[in-house]
Amino acid sequence: MKQAVLQKSKIVIAFLFITTSFFAQSNNEIIKEAQKLLEENYIFLDKAKETNAHLDALMKKGVFYNQSPKDFAKTLTQELRKITKDKHLRFLSPRPPEQSKKDTKASFIQNLSRYRPPMLRGFKLMKSNIGYIDLAFFGGSEEHLAKIDQVMNDMLVADAIIIDMRRNGGGSPTTVNYLSSYFFNEKLLLNTIYSRANDHTEELWVADVKGIKRPKVPVYILTSDYTFSGAEDFSYTMQSRGRATVIGEVTGGGAHPTRGFSLPNGFRIAIPFARTINPVTKTNWEGVGVQPDIKISANKALEKAKKLASTKAVTYRDSFFEPLEKTLTTIENGKAISQESKNAIYKQLVLLTQTGMINESEINAMGYYYLQNNKPETSVAIFESNTQLFPDSANAWDSLAESYLGLENKEKAIEYYQKAIEMDPKGGVGENAKEMLKRIKSQ
Image (spheres, rainbow, N blue to C red):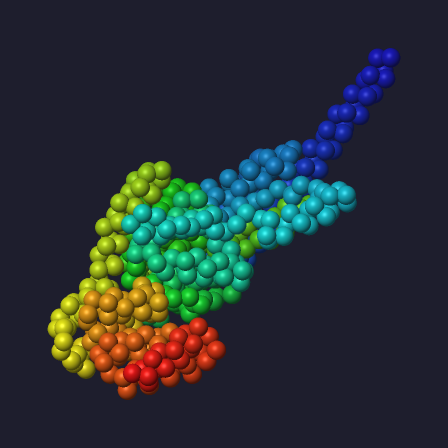
């Protein structure tokens, strides 16, 4: 009996020895593969070599002996970062086993983009006409760019915009650049990304967007210590160009684009292969984070931004409407409007439409306001501008005709009612124009 127990003990000890030796040897071989990838790809070659020497010393000490995959991944990640201080550099344990065949359909459906957590958590228009956008990450597909177009179109009515990066961990540099481009008209170089592996520098310039740009709207960006990578890129770029006020906490400090590599036994390593270089500061936020313009705890950042934005929103709105209002109020009732005043009204309305501050129907309503307040000369100038801005609108021509009736200029009224009929021969506007022509001709 004792001999049998002793024999079993020897077998167990032998098994443990073999298992320990396997883990030790296996883990060390994986580290050697990782070291090779690190030296070939990591953005700073000197740091890669120093880190590899550090890992060699740890392997000799048996630091990675008999560690489970998760513990091994955690330990190696910590050791990789001791020299580099790079939060993008990480070692990952094997993914969990795939679901059984009976769950294949469910797994497939769950991985469709429509069922994944959305990039856009939400957006809304708040008090004082302040827009609010909450982004979870920066997705890298055309679908994500379309989402940005959608939200920026809805933000056209906003007189100030708050963009929440407090729970954003990063994402695609292309999408970061696309959102940034909405806030610049001129073709500026916003960022450069240098890759050591192929000695290549990529330049990210202000891009064309499918929506209307907002180059002057006040922007406030909210940050926290969780804000990382692409979210920091957006915050840093906007701040360095003076296009946004950053409010909140110092961010995580990760400025290196990263690429994943497969290793034996299902392990993976994420290696920063490039570094961002801002053309304004000539550096980046790696290791130090984005420094807010207004440092405040993350949970108080939104209220602070709303308070600041409410004041700036009024200034922004007035900067667009005051010149037009001033021109309109200087026009004397009963006197012909000078061509200079007409040109000024047109230019100001062009600017307002281009920036999304006003649209065709709102210009039309403005014209009728002056017409109903016995200022037909002013209404004519406004309606004429509307037909120049929207020449294919039957309604714009119909309104211009009506304003000329207010001036008792039947010849012009007939001309423009006929134009409205050409634009909309069988529609409601055209029918109204036909009726008005009958009335004029019967008088």
